[in-house]
Image (cartoon, rainbow, N blue to C red; front, side):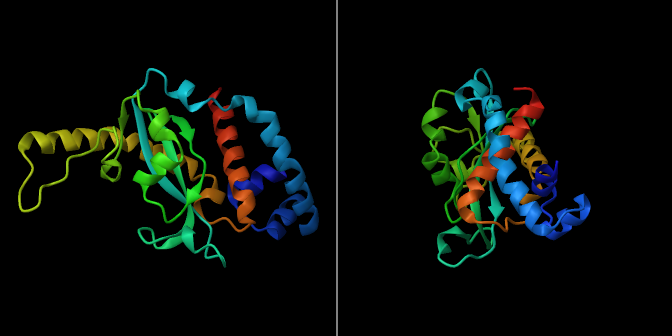
Amino acid sequence: MLTLVYIRQNLNQAAVGDLFGVSQPTVSRIYWKMLPLIGQALCLHVPDIEEAIRGRLVLVDGTDVPTGNRAGHDVNFSGKRRRAGLNIQIAADTKGGLLGISVPLRGSIHDRKAFTECGWEARLAETPVMADPAYQGTHAITPRKKPRGGELSVGDKANNRSISSTRSAVERCIAHLKNWKMLANGYRGRLTELPTVIRIITALEFYQLGW
């Protein structure tokens, strides 16, 4: 319970210790002991992305996990978001249900490139995918951009509205994931451990969904 509260609320360890009546060093020992055990217990509840997306329209979007500026990790700074973090790709269905979370990549990477580097572009090649304009150049269905010096046709505008309306489900999925405050407010621990934390949060989400 202590470990789950720590991940969920992203409190500092002294505050967690106050909640559970133990010292900060005890919180640290419990957390680092229990975290991998939770991951092992739930590993079978995480479906392969190809299993999760089968027969669905897949909505894809990227988000970042803030990490703060770290010495030697300049590649994690995103000019678009104006902060340092790791980029993760999120796949959801049209109801906002989670279908997958990619491996984390450097925060400076563009969503289009992240989609390729995490392996999803190849693995979702035969699946209908819908995404925002950042994914133009992939096989994903994206809104049409206004031509330079011109205007979109009435049909294109209507099509863009339809895509945006459908895509809102993946944004709701991301907002739900950010209830794990460690993904939303900034990760303070060692960066080498963050991929493990993301993987365990993924497992907890799929466990809750009944996979």
